[in-house]
Image (cartoon, each protein chain N blue to C red):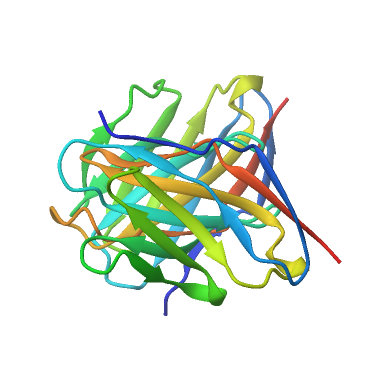
Length: 115
Length: 111
């Protein structure tokens, strides 16, 4: 299984809502990532988990809260978002460790719209 | 800091013609370079990577890339373009923090 799955595919939320994005992989990867992507722009790294521990937070606002409950799952909890947070949120996974040549496998993304 | 640049926002090619999507890099140390493709409303799909060894790297869907150290380039190529190759292409370099992407090149292949 070389697939990363993400749910939901689409999400519309108000600025006062709380919602969560989910990501799952069964490739045995121990590094997982959240990216934010605006239309026709490159993905921007948000968070990196390595062996279920948060290793990188790219100065993301606290209204985004990541969680890695186990080696296969990655969540992104959303609260009090702003309209400018509307974007495609991509999850990715890769082999962990210091091997920078490991490619990342991406999920299809969640299209988030904040009203 | 590691970076990659894609000098062309858009590349237009006729079906059956060869295609090239350009990428140049700036790294300290050995570069780990990647190409990804993104179809509309989809995630990124890995095409190929350069780590070390042969300068010509073969990847998925008939794509290949040529690593040129003297020109600090890693151009993506395909001998014969298909309409279905139309998509957004990203070059990326591995940074200690993760992947650093170029701005992307929109490839349009017309019949």
